[in-house]
Length: 248
Image (cartoon, rainbow, N blue to C red):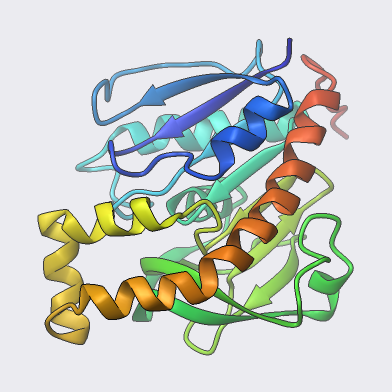
């Protein structure tokens, strides 16, 4: 049975809508929770894919979170072996960093439902190509990244030029949270640190309004998530485990 390695940073950043899709593809999932075990040293050799989830830390803050260097090395090893890689939010930033791109503070935070626009290349992408030209997607990030050299730019938003990219044919970085469902969003808002961050940005939180906006967009998010994550899961099922790309 194919196996997938999932890198987790905090308890409330989970696979969400990605979990049932991976299990539906009969993928065995192993979590490595760096909040619980920051000294963990997993390796990718016995896995068929890698997922790197979000988290509240910055991708460049290895002084406070030394495991970030471990994760960058794991991503690089997965890329070398041509394994499917999916980075979500912080995970996308770590993927960009592993590819040599700069990760830095965004001009402004994106929190909540925002409009994301596909690029021309995005409309032809095997994972995102079924998106409409504009989609409302859930965001929660303070940092952004430069587009890695050789990567394909797939999506942007008015506040964040680099919302999604593909590197080669096996690696995707998504700044937005397709995996988020209503329970997950409300759990994030309930977290004291997240709630303070949100209230500093937009003022007191109207949970009723947030629920109503989520109801408007979550059905479409679930539809997109099934298509995107299903395509990624299929790649993991077909991944040539242990293959190392030839280097010039």
